[in-house]
Amino acid sequence: MAEKQVTGKPLICCHRWLSPRCDGACAEVDSDTEAVAGRGFKLGCISCKRRSEVEGSATVEWYFRPDGESDFVHIYSYNENGPTIEHNFFEDRIDWNGSKRSNDIQDASIYVLNVTFNDSGTYRCFFYRTLTYENYEYFDTVDKVVHLTVVAKATRGTASIVSEVMMYVSIIGLQVWLLIEMIYCYRKIAAAGEEALREAANAEYLAIASESKDNCAGVQVGE
Image (cartoon, rainbow, N blue to C red):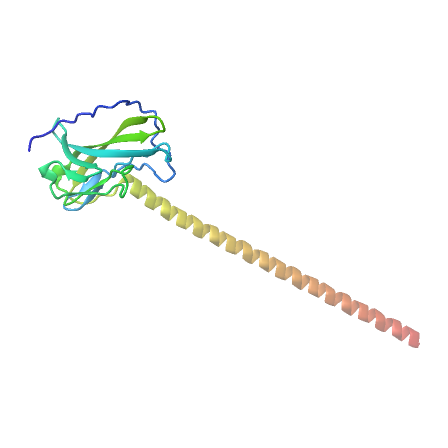
């Protein structure tokens, strides 16, 4: 199959005045970049609209440049008619993993099945978006880049290690804090118990002293 170069579609307007990070129902998350050979892998590509109330529609195209190559090839398309695998190298190996039941596509992620070492390289995801206003339409294009590395065995990234360390630190810190709280509460209860015993002893002493005084007064009257 002949390779196709990455070419931009003609746009009536191409200024990027729309901020992509804002819709409360949409969050732009960077794609993972390390896949394991023989397994499936999700290539993430998300572009959020600035104003969710504005009607819109979008089509998506994916391109791939293998490591060591200079040109991109068109590998996948998604539009109102559904998905199309554009390159035989990915035949039966790509599934749509993005927005469903809507032409207003904000998530254009795809899932690559049975990843091979030849899948290493650079992927580009293009959104061709049309926003419909009352008196005009605005055409915009957004592209995302994913640099994919394929490894034989999964490796742990720095972020994962740091997250695990912080989790254990948090657990230990919480246990220390609970221990301190328990010691504090025990001492407080013990101090309150001792105070109650002192008050009871003082009350008993005053009662005995008062009774002795009354007895002495009775003896003097009898004499």
